[in-house]
Image (cartoon, rainbow, N blue to C red):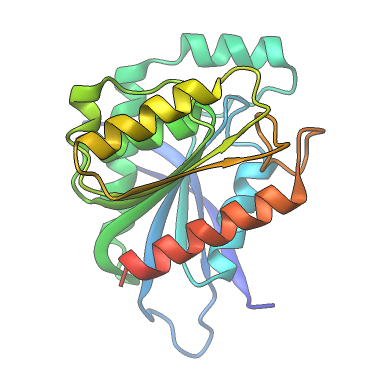
Length: 233
């Protein structure tokens, strides 16, 4: 398994500071070798061990991955606590944190090309769509079970290629809503693949939760990696 290195970092974010976890390949004798960069956006739990692991997994696949900490150090373990953190999150500040994270990532000397991928889960899936709509440096996006769909006029601004993953058994996101997203993206001529996994509930990718579905998670992961490898070159 390839060596990686991970570290907690701080970066500038619209006159303030953001924080997050940076994972990257450990190139050993070839420091500074170029790698594509990917932003990882948290679920409503925060920057927990699972999201750090997703960043580490991307680093093992040859990417430099940055997971911004949108709760600035707070992590939830219970749904009620996570709901409060998500509801109390300053959306404007979170947007600045994400834009700052993209700039920081693309400014790293070992990140090339200077365009970013983005993968996010649940709340982070919705924010992946919003970031792709607002930041043209995002060239590839993989939103997983995005519960909040940006309005059509925002989706129309997306220039990134997308792979969108949903579960057919997601109690919070009806398949009809997923098909509406797919139709809207298609009507605006977006390059987007929307896949609904049979038998998969919400958060089917999170292998620390009972909702984890290995087959669906593995397939969605491979689609995401394929997207990033194709676009970020």
